[in-house]
Structures are given as structure tokens and as C-alpha cells.
Image (cartoon, rainbow, N blue to C red; front, side, top):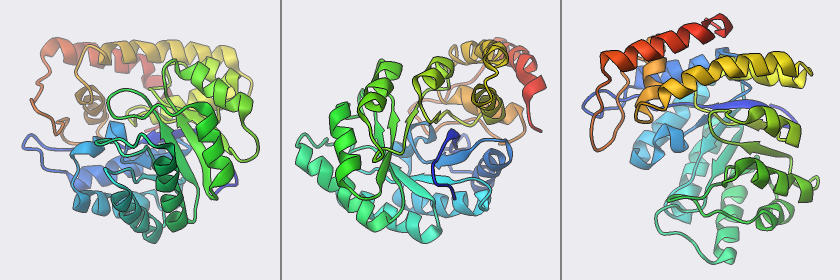
Amino acid sequence: MTDRFRGIFSIAYTPFDARGDLLWDDFYNVCDWIARSGAHGLVWPVMASEFTVLSFPERVRGIKIAVEAAARRVPVVIGVHDTSKAGAVALTEVAAQAGADAVIAMPPWATKLEDRALIEDYYRAIAEVAQRPVWVQNIGGGLGSALPAEFVVRLCREIEWVQYLKEEKSPQGHSASEVIDMADEAVKGVFTGSPCYWIIPEHARGVSGCLPGSYIPDVDARIWNLLEAGAKAEARRIHTLKLVLENAMRAIPYPQAAKEVLRMRGIISAAAARGPKPVKLDKYDIADLEEALDIVRPFFVE
């Protein structure tokens, strides 16, 4: 849909009820919401989507729904990472057949590949099936492989269709700059993660955009568009107000906080996560979120 992906590519959350059953109508609503919010793209399923607790059939069904709900209004980037190359390739086939615009994958996240040749083979297999842009998700921590910048750039140079990077190794901004400084035309874009916490200095570093969760994609897109237009002072003003909400959310376990905001905004009907222990927000949590939402409400797309 575009020669270069750029902007706020919002990550769809996966809605569940209190029993852990996936709410498919709500999921369609989230994807439709992203497409009409002003965001520049839609991504699902990645870490914010709780992809590690989704079954293979759920991911297949969700891929088709995401593409259908977006209805070509924004590019759709499908997460195809799996515990094996075979699984990632199978999900890539589904994404391609569904009409996704691109795919994104971190290396296998359960039993990690420590041999760089095996990681290269993993991405080459995905790219051969995708025949559309492939994003490398590069993160540290328990799930990530924290690939060095020179290796990621080499993947883009040597594998056709591997073109984009979601760089979120800590420190995220410095890691993004490291890739940008050594990249050439083979790297079509370097994006960052997190809820756009550092989007203002990251824009100055030359990132192509950010992949935040989908609870305020309209606000995040507005900030990005202001930065692109050179209106940094107004972008900073809105970003400062947005941080009141982000701070309120940090007091509540993730991803229930983000889902509660989506519920308050009328996008989904339940804020549960498919996790080991349900979290019930109390009246103080709700009151703080409601006050924070009122602060950013003037920037909403309804």
C-alpha cells in the first residue's frame, strides 16, 4: 500500500472475557478502530497482543479478521513469530493468503537460536514465503534475542524482502540510532516500540515511526503528524498531557490497564487478559484512569 511504511503502526490488543475466551466481535472492533483512528498502520499479534497464549487456530482466524477489518484503509502487518521456523513459515503463508501488507517476526522465542546462520535461515524462509516486506522485531529480555545492529543490517542487505526493523533493545533510542547510522537503502525503515514514551527524541534521531498499543492511537498519530509537520512545541504539549494517562496505567498490571482504557472508550466489552491471575481494578484505579482520559479526550477521534 505504500513505498515506505511510516508513522504510528498501532498494535491491536486481543480481547478476552473473564474465562479466557477470545471475544471475536471485540477483536474486529479493535482492528476497525485502529483503521479509522488516524493511525498509519495496524499490527497483530505481537507482544502487546499476548501472542504467546494464542493457539495456532486463533492466530489463523485473527489474521483473517485483522485484514478484513482494516479493509485496505491502513497497511496490516502480521506477526508470524513462532517457536520454530516451520511454525513461522506456516503463519506467513496464512498472512500472505489473507492479503496482509507485511509480516513481522522476532526469532523463535521459547528455545532460542544462538547460531546466527540459523537465524538468517529463519528470516530467509519467512521472506521466501511472504514475498512482501518483512520486519525484524529486535528486543531483549525473556523473549527476545537482542540482535546486534550490524547483523540486522546484514539481514536486510542479504535477504530480499527483509526491509524493516522494530528496534526496542534497551536503551531503545541509542539502539535505533546505531542501526540508522550504519543503514543504507536496504533498510527501508527503523521503528521503535513502547507506548511512544520517547517519540519526540526518536523522531529527531530519524526513526520511521513507532509501534504502540492501540488504546490511544488517535493521540499518538496526532503527535507524530505534528512532528512530521515541524510543530514540535505542540507535539510536546500533547505528549506531556498523554503522559498523565501513561503514568496512571503504570499503576495497573499490563495489559489490563490498556484494555480497561479500550473498554472505557467503548471499543471492547471486557478488559480481561489470558493470564495466570485475574486482576480486578478497584474504584481508585478507575477514578485515576477516568481523570487521565479526560485530560487527553480533546484529542480523541470518536
